[in-house]
Length: 367
Ligand SMILES: Nc1ncnc2c1ncn2[C@@H]1O[C@H](COP(=O)(O)OP(=O)(O)O)[C@@H](O)[C@H]1O
Ligand SMILES: [Mg+2]
Image 1: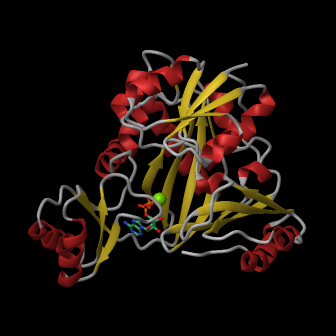
Image 2: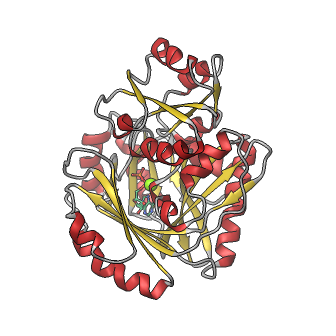
């Protein structure tokens, strides 16, 4: 069995270990935060993500190294390949760390994205670009954005000047607003032999820029959309010679899929797979990077995941609903912080939706 090194020790790392420990694997984590959620499921080395020397000695002991965090500098991840097997290979990081590079990569692979203007070096270019994109647009920092941070909607000249004042120092991209009917994500896994398998499309609802709810419809819903999304994502993974789990967020407009973001890792919208699939996204990733067999992914129950944000729920209240599973990440409560999630599993979509609606009232949202 393998000693797996994980760069990043957040909740995703914690859940990777919770899936990989029963397979006999051992885990070590590397993270700047000594109180990281994964500290209780493996040894934690505390260090900065750009401290190459420290990272090199961390990976020396590992059979395989992976990441749960995509902002490890590419040059650092590449240096680690000299000392250990790093999966997925670091080239995937390059395309997910920068919003313009990401969109160019998606388009080069035949996948539609939101219209965009890049670069946006001056406020004059910004004003012209807003006009060009139809009068309303979203200004985003090219790097390090998450949970809606580093973004501003621009509706008029005044917004543009205000946004420039706050964000003008950063490298920026301006995106046209996609009038989406819904947001979905597709999580897929690719094995070293090139076999790809997809999880069911998940519908995602955001609140205050943060994911609130992910719902996996039973496979009967939107089969054509599922096939189209899977073809897109499998193509990207082939292009990257990817090994492991990768996620793409899409906007759905009519029956069109417009890609929004690539995450070269397990994803918040796939947490329901722990309780709703025979093999979770976390186990699938571990199997892929350790060369264990993978099979077509099967969902066994209708599932909805609700994120716990900012404050902790009362476990008595949450688990009082039959079919719920509570997952807490061992993080100190703070406004806007993801502290855990609840998954509700039921035999059919209707029953699940009815219970999820009641359950949501017991799941904190403090931002
Ligand atoms: N171009 C766009 N058109 C419409 N909505 C958008 C656009 N970009 C972002 N959003 C909304 O903001 C959310 C967060 O943006 P995203 O680019 O995914 O950044 P983050 O890295 O914070 O997840 C999206 O899930 C979507 O709801
Ligand atoms: Mg996103």
